Image 1: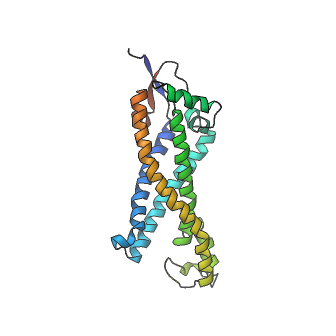
Image 2: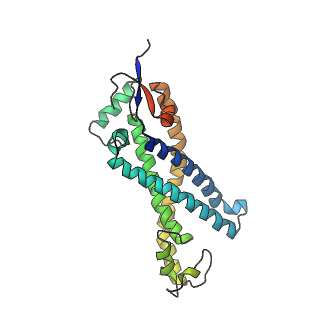
Image 3: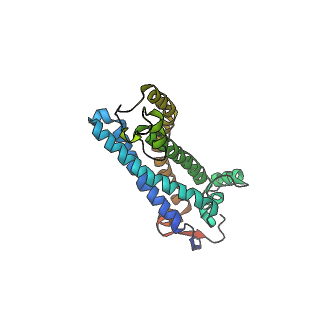
Length: 237
């Protein structure tokens, strides 16, 4: 029996733009990051490593800016731009998850309950990557927003921090440098493990989208391009 469906606008242009910028930025960051992690295997020189890290940080700025904008939109946006529609914290979510598990034909305007859990996990890792990455950029190649502070913290001559360069000991106090490296250690650990977490969750997310489309048949994939889903009438959020 066919289901009477209607074309419903769900994903705004801002959300779709965020999504695809995020996809491109993360893909580039993963590719560059893998080369950096395996620098010895690929025979990357010191200058090459600095170049790769610079590229990684520049793409990271695009990623971070996009993510912060999405964070703000989640609080001030409309409809399914808002976090209350995206994350699994709304009242009755547990029951909604049970209903989702039991009703294989249920359709949703926004993310289904399993999708909301995935979005929470992804955003947790993305923000971990952003914060830890900015700290690492400041301690590794002395890039903003923390690079100036860390460069000054290790400088022998505090008035001449511009000569401090990656992998150079010019104007660097060795004891202060070791302290800075100790500070960055937990951020590197968080960055690496959240990176591996993303490598696990991203394919799972894609697989979940495929399964959801087969279950719900709402044009889930194309909706992230044109914003429209095809939903049964009276579909709930």
